[in-house]
Length: 120
Image (cartoon, rainbow, N blue to C red; front, top):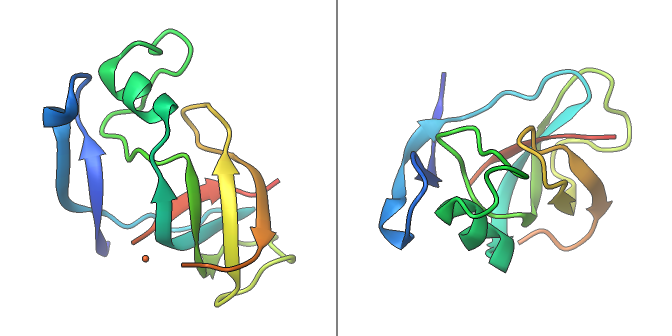
């Protein structure tokens, strides 16, 4: 399996639990996209989830890559994906659930690493 660079957390805590490291690069499954992330937003939900304040509502599958909003370029598509192809510029916002399903993927300005998410 290939690796990618990512900021990950391995346990709940303050900013000191953030680690920039190599992580396994996911492969898209059926109905999924692999997005090479060029930009990811860090919102209040990210630090609250990282600190463990939301673990009853949003239990994180550790290790976890924070960043709820992303823009980038489709790197690969899984079987059954017909609306997107490799090279499409996209932006998306995952649902607030551990499986990180996307609420919506939209064509748009993609601006750089890797994220996997379910496409509805």
